[in-house]
Image (cartoon, rainbow, N blue to C red; front, side, top):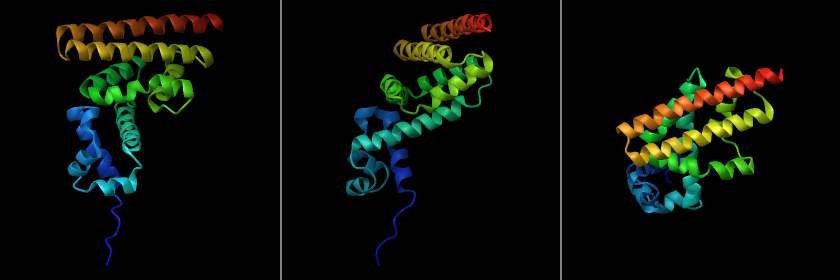
Length: 187
């Protein structure tokens, strides 16, 4: 009698690939290594994913959903960015996977749940809408991405990384103040 398909297999494969990403970066994710980590076979992976790129797409989506959960509870834009940077520094390979696709996805109009959450937060907190909200959100994401890359390069937990984080949050407050004043002047 044939074995019943494992309904959790796809999730196990993505979880295994995330673990490999965290420990060895993108080069550590091969279909063979994922199969070994998930206690299955390479042909079984091909039953769920056409190729490594499709698997990585699912890994990126899972990493994004975990980031959404991390930032989603923030009550302010400052808290949102603080959590985003801290998560990204904690998981630098996930950060690279997500960040490397940001510009392409923005230009292509593809869904970006973290970016959408940030825009919603900005509408509530600063009251900006439309083009100004897009400009502010893009400026904030650029600030956070640059800060995170610099913190990772400086070495997480170092005085330089802590200063970069502090400076990022101070710059964020200035951006929010300028756009808030601009929004009130437009009213």
